[in-house]
Amino acid sequence: MANKYWIGGGANTNWATSANWSLSSGGAAGGGIPTSADVANFTGVGTNANGVSTISATITVGGLIILPGFTGSIVHNAVLTCSATLTLGANYTISGTSSMTINLATSMTSNGKTWPNNMTMTGASTIKTLVDNWTIDGTLTVSSTTVLNGNNLYVAGMTMTSPISGTTHIHFSGTGTWSGTQAIGNNVTFEGATTVSGVVGYTAGTMTYSSGTVTTTGSTLTLTTTPTLNTPGVHWNNVQVANSTTVTLNAKLLIDDTLSTAATQNVVFAGTHAWSADTLLHNGVGACTLTLKENLQYEVWGALSIAQCRVAAPVHVLSSSTTVKADIYLHPNARCECMAQFTDINASPGRPINTFNGLITDCINIYRYTDLKTVATTF
Image 1 (cartoon, rainbow, N blue to C red):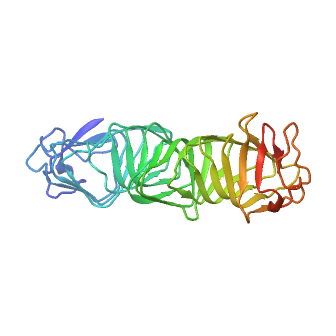
Image 2: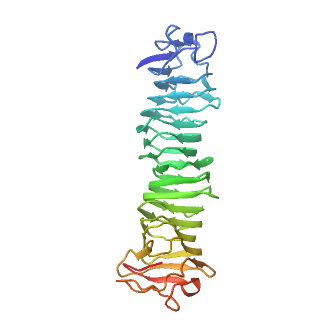
């Protein structure tokens, strides 16, 4: 790529003025406006090089490098797209409210500068690398499948229209919203004021609650693959385990509404803690196997609900141990829905689940599953 250098030698401060650019640092004016084949450089060298550069129309550059010597300001009044190297300077001012788009494979260096606006990551199946920690005060939108590697990302909110994964640790550290159905596959920490909106997904890594507030009203967290959750300060609204998944719980998982599994799924809950949900729901037409960690008590407060209550769609509940029980506790006034068709709770080759009269018909005679073994029962 060719290098173009901001010298501010034109009749105005517009980025799109050819005379404001040079082919060398501090060189002659008229170098031409940087294009997608060029790297735009701000070095601060030149009589007018530390003034204002205003982006007033959409711009795409191959790269953007702002050196510490640039002490002027860039006014973002239109979207700037950067397709390769992105380096912010420590000593310049960012103004304006327009977003920046990071396209293709990009190496990103912040030098401690906070990006104050929204940002979009695009470029299908590209790897983006954070050379140092980044802070984005706006919302990060992931619009193409992205691998984000490197240092920490501190962000107010995220909109997930495509999945993201990688080694970067994502921190929800400001005030913002997490939305979009595509999954995050990075380590995540909540430490700000985050609103979870609609259906969101988490697929791998560890999700941790550290501080702040997480508002989940009306939302659904979808878990797939091998997620680990350590969110004791979060009351999730709905949690759906959508695929054959092993969920590791390092703190009690609090679900104010429904924990649901779908048909033909093999769902495993591992780790050191259990879940507590208002409703445990199986809403599919095929069998589901639910494996619980031995010696832990899982709680249902509202309803044990099996929407497809027939032999073709059983839910098999197992303990992770062949000798030590798991425990599902139904709190007083909880109800069992669609249980009347089951008159035989004997498991083969396991043992019967303990009830008051030997039949699962409603919550009055069930209360607690206490004999979950290798093969426990169908409910």
